[in-house]
Image 1 (cartoon, rainbow, N blue to C red):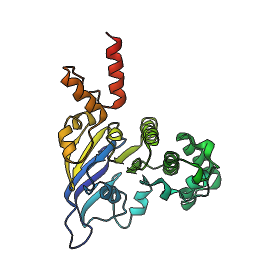
Image 2 (cartoon, helix red, strand yellow):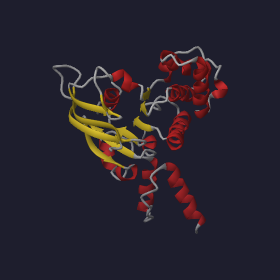
Image 3 (cartoon, rainbow, N blue to C red):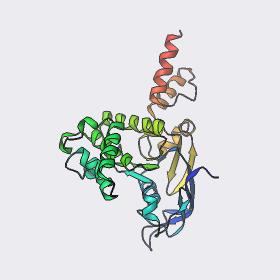
Image 4 (cartoon, rainbow, N blue to C red):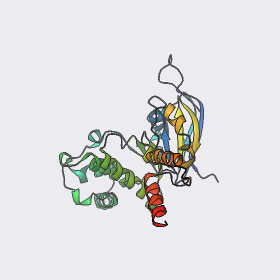
Length: 279
């Protein structure tokens, strides 16, 4: 039996009848419990792909299979229960008067009984370290805290797949680091399948696999360490080279070779500290 939780076959999509094809005979797969980061320049098709997978957009032809079900007009709402989505702007996602009410909103729409709803709201907020803010109004929260609440709202619905559509792009550096670390922890502890639509190379570095999109085409699909070896190609696509790769390049100029597995900022720091302590 296939371990794929998402399987896109021969997908064709354009926004208008007269427009150009954004995706033409597009194919890709995501395995269950995999974290895939999708990167690319503006207009490459990243967010459109996320909306197609979530059923917010319909392709002209081809198929999207989620958890062995081929998406159709008849089952799209059932399939969407398996997918939780966190969007870019934390301000636009808050619908409750306070944190707990916001997380409960989706459960209320699914007519979850009150006792079970309270339990799932508490559990979700505890997972994102926001339970102590349950009665807080959104005006009192930072951007990073609001994105944590948005994640809690998704977790409470118990999806199998979480899609993050530029979910860290509007946060300050500290908030971005906190949310990225939270995503990593959720993946490790709870085995969600995660799709990150992102410009943030440091976020992509934590994924199991990175897909590089360019004008609706996959130009690379590989583990982060392999993708980040192609710094010049990433720069040509308008993508930043990871800080760790910049450090690695500077060390290479000094004839210091860094093992390929040290491709994230934290791993690079650990390697440098270890190298110094071994001298």
